[in-house]
Image (tube, rainbow, N blue to C red; front, side, top):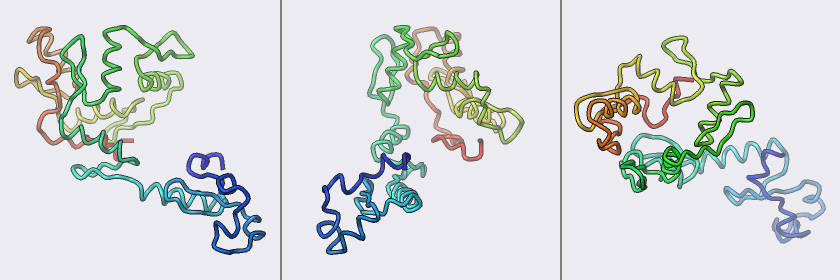
Amino acid sequence: MDNSQGYFVNLQQMVGDKTGDDVSSGQDTGAQNSQELMFCIFCEQIVESKVSVLISHVCESIEQSKHTCCICGHVEPALWRLKRHLLKHTGEKTFECPWCPYKSAYENDLKKHVRQHTGERPYVCAHCPYSATSSSCLLMHLKTHSGEKSFKCVYCSHRSYSKSNMKNHVRTHIGVKPYKCPSCDFYATQKIQVTKHVLKKHGKDAEFQDISPANIVDPLSCDDLNNVS
């Protein structure tokens, strides 16, 4: 029942003691009180509070509420997350760094980037002095303490702490280099490789905001690592 608290509301708490005639169209009040009823916030239906019924119902409701990208088929559980995902396809980057030419489609990504300028690292490891600019970086670091490497390469025995690192590794097997230098024909499997190339070959004033996936097919795009885990 604890895991379902975010999906259901106790019906009696919503309507007081009127769980009989008012709610269930004239059914016997005593019979209904013997089985507590719950209100589903996903589909606004009333269901029994049996654990098996709740689990089955919420899984069905969540599945029906998923939103699918019409471009790549990627599925998100909420519409706002699908809209955020679509920015990957449009290339729109409306959030600009006040210190450098960096641009991002996502406000949170810009906040993390700005911390590289300010030096702010608010996420601190409880096991060592390490600190990070984002919670995701800290979570990945924590796996170095636990030894957990949940992502396994399908081509070799390599394992990784993070999905993004595994993506980069798998690209070395399949030969995909989705990142291109904005000033020449240099391609790389990782964005950081292009960044280092730009600094070395083209100087620090190069347009870093233009370092984005090249217009080629990347079989590992859109967080599709279904076969790499």
